[in-house]
Length: 391
Image (cartoon, rainbow, N blue to C red; front, top):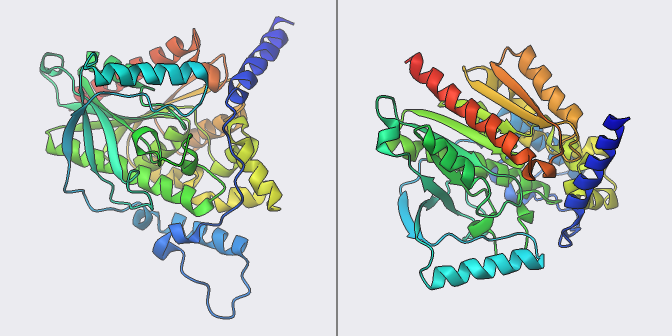
């Protein structure tokens, strides 16, 4: 009885959190072939292939040639810049806008100190110049905390529509263990968000090609950050991703064996299934339904950005892995997270599973955020310590 009441209360809370923002926009379906460059050649003359069939074929080709799709040239313009941190919120609630205004005022008057950000040009170009300058807040661990062990670093990828302060506390937590961190702004997020947007809509949308290109860019940006860290003498690398960030982090780790510590904070197997069933993406599903697409269609056109199709690559190199999922998740349904765990077992991945008694959005609420932080922080600390102990 108490369990059912708790479930009902949790689902109501989760729903309230996912419906409080009023600036989700239903945009029409766009195939976005123009975003995929050489991976989306024109159909042969006289072809009877539909746009849906063409996009499915392209996705299958990308999966087969994923090493090419996620390949890149190391940037040559890495630089550290100092500036005042700002919020860059994605909602228009009065309290959030007031917080942003106060932060801008404090920055203008010099009341807040400047901090360092790693900047460089993304090897994957989009159609938005502001999006193509990668941004990662730099959290170097103190020399005293790193003494006697290799230089170790985490790349942190927050959730979809995260503001610029999301996950910063995790970075400072890692610093206490002597682990440096780069808190990476995902494509179309915070300072990288085009001025025409209130939310980070172009990262996941009803423009299918652009959504795939955003994932390609995110994966390549992660790998470029490792290149910079290596140039600074770092030897051991890990990645932490939450929600959409966990998808990007997984695909990056599948294609880059340097990532030996992986923490996935909410995980799922098929990108299209999440888009179709999740509360957070109901406006995108609406666009697909209006265009006459089915759940199976959406699953097929998002193969290229679905972790399930890269599981063998992921398992091919040794990693220490954490998966955190939530029992009452209405965005990444619990069944999808259990599929991840089953696939890890099937492929003999060295993983740890932790379960939160909440939902997707409520993970960021008290007290669940502290439990989540404990799981993530202790895992990363122990995983890097084990790397050090085995040399």
